[in-house]
Image (cartoon, rainbow, N blue to C red; front, side, top):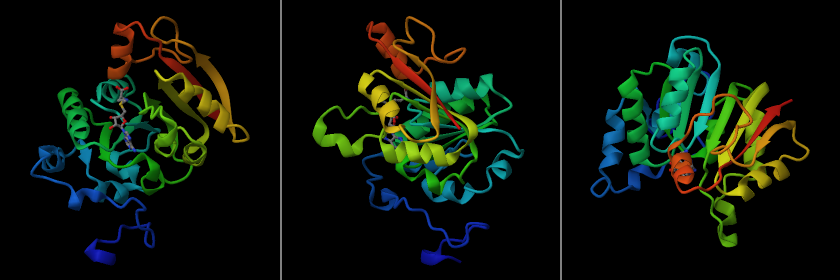
Length: 240
Ligand SMILES: C[S@@+](CC[C@H](N)C(=O)[O-])C[C@H]1O[C@@H](n2cnc3c(N)ncnc32)[C@H](O)[C@@H]1O
């Protein structure tokens, strides 16, 4: 047994997750999804289970296949459709909010997905979940914008995150970002400077024109912006 009574997973013997999950102090009485998300197997991995799969995703999915990550799947529409359209790829969603984890699980259950799972986890601690060079694609769709300067530290699109992307993608792996907040796309390109990430495509508005990739799947937020006539920006980068 490892520290604090947690079984020590094989092959990550001395590693501990860096993410200190606040679940134990969270209010189950006010948020029913805290208990609910634990009942959503096999579509959900709660934080204390998710990290134990770090070096064993092929075992989790029962096969060796490319592994695709979506950060912040929200209601799960995009992740589910991605999994349906790409049966030869395994998919992991990483979502911090319990309700959205449950919503994503509901979508995955509806289509009987066997190649997708959603982890309740924090995107700043992806090293807990994935070994270097093991991801084929990383999607970030409409990350929370945190437009005010004083919230800068909360933004996902930052140098440390792009460094994580570089470390986790296999050579030739792809990073794709869509955002209604244009500075997010500009910033991704800016902070990737000097990293082995080449910009391979950019679009000013994927709601009225093509995305930098084929067959774009509309996310829940993307749909809201399209209906309001607002642009959704996109960039694609490939890891060298
Ligand atoms: C604006 S919503 C976009 C949802 C979805 N991607 C879409 O396009 O419809 C941002 C999502 O990211 C999730 N999120 C925010 N911070 C996160 C973090 N640190 N780790 C994982 N997910 C996070 C939110 O809970 C939310 O589901």
